[in-house]
Image (cartoon, rainbow, N blue to C red):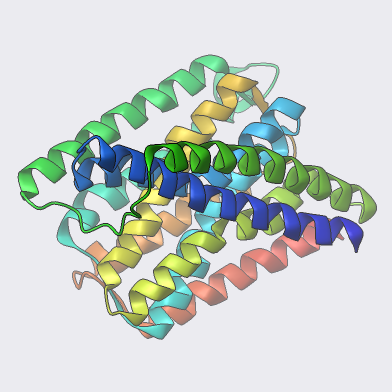
Length: 319
């Protein structure tokens, strides 16, 4: 129980730290007259991914690579099947044509790349299945291409992003940035250490903890953002938020974490990786193959049921 309470406290510190970090960085950027669209594509995009980054990076540093990889794989599964599923049940989701044609296929590609990188034994006759330093550099290179695409998209759209940026002095902005970073580091340490403790106390592998509890916990900010967007009937924002998060999770967080320390796949199975690919393919099918550019309430229910089945599989693995 104590480990679980510390886990919740750590997650709370990470999420709060991410929020004040984004507020401070965005306010500081605004002081230097940086356009909203640039702030949105850099400060806000990276800031909203910072909870996953803090937890995966610390896990990599401590040698808990199963939590680092499981966090990313599990979060990407939860983002689509659980979060978009719940959001579509609240209000049917409209998917923008550009998201269907470019961004969702890129999230499928990201999932396939992870599958290839952690199957060294099968595909390359190596002695271990690891995401190495060179793999991390490749992932960050994909991130650079994705960022270039986003900037180009923003420039060609001709619209500035509507952001709510707090007005604060430079000194206060810097204080918020420092405090946010400290909370991210401290909260990430508490969260990972308690997750490892829970795994040991219940006789569960770190992979299962990473794929379930850690993944769902770090996906809560995306859930809140998507639900609010759905309630405001801005469903395209809900989908874009989730798809963008999945791409950042692989290219940015997994890439950065593997540069800190090579990530051994451990007990992450190919079924988990297939589920990650399958989730993105299902979303692609809803938006493109069926030609409606929508995720209906019925499809949302199916998404959630699929996630429950996946959770059931993880519980069975843990027993």
